Structure formats: structure tokens, C-alpha cells
Image (tube, rainbow, N blue to C red):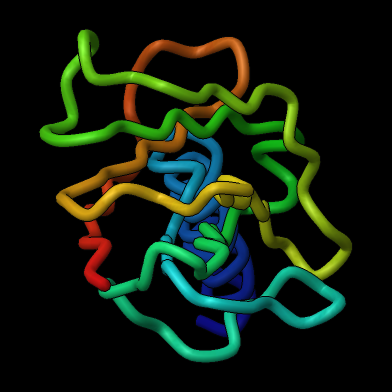
Length: 138
């Protein structure tokens, strides 16, 4: 009985490990997205918010799976998230050692009031990983 139990346990552990690895590499590469007014030195968000003033810098901080993704693309939108509303694209944003992508939006003359949005993609891919929307008020 003991001779059979050890190989069965090994096979079960291999199957569980293989399933976890498959899910890790084939599932979403971006696991969390946050908007904030500042990030720490590792790219982690300090305090999440979806409301900004025209003079604020908007930071997008996204947690990625470090082994599955190295670069990301962030697209910023004024109004609804729609191709015709794109106004800024940031490509090849590298993942930090802490596992975060950071993009920022600021305009010297200030952002206009209204609704905005951002999407994040695995670099070189056209499938949106995450969408976030926010508002600028004065």
C-alpha cells in the first residue's frame, strides 16, 4: 500500500502544479489596476481614487504577473473608451521589480473636466487586459 501511495501523491502534485502553471501563463497577465494621485518608488499605488482635479497627475498602476508579462501598453481616452476618443498611447512600459506597470497622465495647462478612461494591454497584443474609468472635476 505504501509503495503505491507515494507515486499517486507525486502524480497528483505534478497535475496540480501543471494546472497552476497553465492558468498562470494562459490567464490574464494584468491582475489589478488602480488609479491614484501618486505611486511609491516601486510603482505601487498610494491611495486609490477615481476622481481628480484638472491640476492632478493621474497615475495608472497595474499589477502584472512578472513571469508572464514584461511590457505593457496603456491607452488614455477622453470620454467613453472608444477608438475615436484615444488621445495618448504609452508603449513598452516595463514591469518593475515589485511587479507593477506605471503610466501617468498630466497636461501642463491642466486636464479638461469630464469623463476619462484608460486601458492596458500586454505589449504587442490587441486584447484589452483591464479597463478603468475616472472623472476630472474642478
